Length: 604
Image: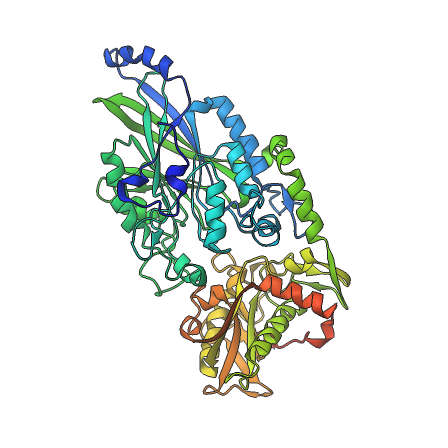
């Protein structure tokens, strides 16, 4: 039967069998019935092939545009981004394969990441009465998505924004392991069942199971606590895949907002693995393919043998932001009265090989121009230029600025409280090496570019000893480099395994990091107020909610006492600070308080 959006858009889309969603792909069922007798009549095995296309981690990218640089997107590999590019690739695949022989799915993190998505969540929110339709919903509806898993960043703006986005989509948002906290029933549709019409009159029933990241319970605790819980992917896949097979699914595809590496960034705070896609393939029988998301890596094809059946499960992860489109090609054969999967292969297409689909760019031209005008508003001036180009290995004013605003904000919030007398420190990271603020006039986009994530600010109490551990953990970021060896800044960090945003600078202390020493024994000359740091002293640390919730698995902070928190993005806090001050006086906060050394000698 045709898919009825009301079947899956309700707030209580979790009433047992009531979440079963059956849709039809393609047309021509009468034509198919005409050849049905030929299939049943036994003239040999019938074979059929179809393709499932997949994207993931679109993060609010519709146009091939960087709102932080106010220019067309570009990187060292000359990748392109955005749904307008993806749309062109999708059209080409549909033209080649036949539209009725294709499906299109996504693996989550859709409505956060660009100023376009921020604008329609916060500035002109989709949740207001008679509000706009989210640009990502308009684009994905127009392109013709069949389903999308929910990602962890879907919760960044709160559940009301996510529910409104869900309502605006012409396809289901899937999350079998996103459960209502009270009833423990799915808060979103766990799966959708699609019927792919074959020329032989025997439709292929394709089940798409959506899974998301358990870390949502930590990273967006303020938005989901008491409302939703997020059990492990393997646990819920083991529950749903047999059900889908018993319902007659010929093909089972998992769309998982979870990487494949088997690692977690939140340590032992939850009993579930963050990047569990390969474990799902290995441990849960009955899965044919998994579209992988979350990790922002490119995996054209990765095969995992299921431990129980020995069957090869094909995984693929297209690169983030619409830079790649995955193609799963399925070969089926009709035998023993049903379709059997004979072969599965995967590959990715590069979106930089095609132009943007003008249908999409025309559709959202006005929204794009509105956001470009918004981000280019001048909100103040800066006494000097600041750049993050060297912030990963040098103490730079641009990181000092973030920390300065955070410290001032926390100090003001704690005034008059029992914690007002404690010294306030602050942590920040190099979130983007391309971030920069010019001397002179400063716009919203330039300030927003310093902090591209939707993190909010908290205050936690830590001791000197805990801060020492914290800095030692952070210093794992650097590659051990002996004294006298050549220094190549491009090879100085473990950025491939430890992202820049998981290296923290702590402002308010002075220290050195000796990269000639082994990790765990690198922090030297750790001082506060000109004196060696007292391990027993207490400090308030201004810290983002990702880190405070366990992101990056830094020691102590997640269990430290919280003395203040707010719900405003740090990015907006910085923008508001610039608007209020009018001038960024770099001389007020810029100082070199930490440096890299080798056997005590400065690296730079």
